[in-house]
Image (cartoon, helix red, strand yellow):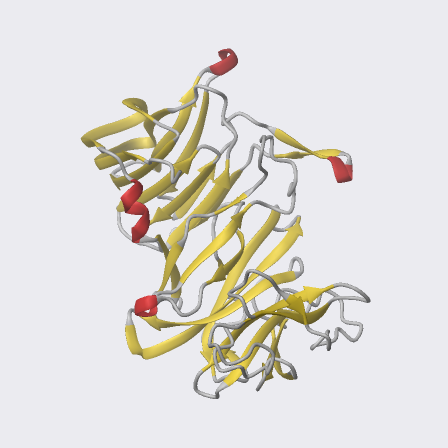
Length: 405
């Protein structure tokens, strides 16, 4: 919103909008479109592009915000395997302030869809840091596309990380969370984002009808202190609680092997507290069923030996997806894992299962993991599993979720 009409293009109503987007004619560049009717219609700026590509490759995905301390508009934009930070007084003229990325984080594929935003460390406004997030395209190193973030300081011109260059912070331990973008200007200083639940290994191959792909639930972000440096924590926004229907509660279950519970559902919110005890691996078993004479399930678990969180859809139904543009089948029945940043023998798991996606938040969101899943009709059982010893389910609350419509 260009409330002060710094661009001179939207008038003094205080409601003018300026859309900054990547145009592709003649190569990728950044261009503007303006609206004076609250976004009902947009007109392209006659002077486009405002930031020419000048032969740059992979020059796209601008995220623009106002930096209050320097009173400038800041654009963070993809420069291939790094990001560029540009500044402007009026949204029309842009100057390169700095670049970031060389030698930092994961570089297995192009960096896309950057975002740059402030968060207080442990909720303390006197310890304000900045998070630079980027998504990385399909690569063999990551088994598809992925996303990562770096925590640092930002003065309106340059980004300086507070973590070592070799530290890689993956945003989501699953395979299907990409291109997340935050909302600016939310009440109470909240920072919320949503990501694409999909993967560039098979972007257009979902076996669905009437729609293809969707966004994650909105997630509220925070920064937490950790022994290896600040960690980005994610939690479903509290507004989702209003969709819960009457819950089913299970308590104090000793788990060894697999236990099926008298609970079912495919559009549900689960909250579990699990004492790993002597088990090496333990967790929730979702989408249980036996369609076509075969047993199916989707595991959400914690590994006590590797200190990892894992999602496993190798037995959940669909094994491969056809990618027409490459004329090949790609593996879909995969297992993904990432570090469990929380500590202790008791893990908390929040799981949002919504028909074809599983979003997991472990230890109050210190680790998150998101995966697509395409189960067979009738696969809706819920159970528990433990390997290598006995675990204890301290509590499990299963809340059916009503649709928005």
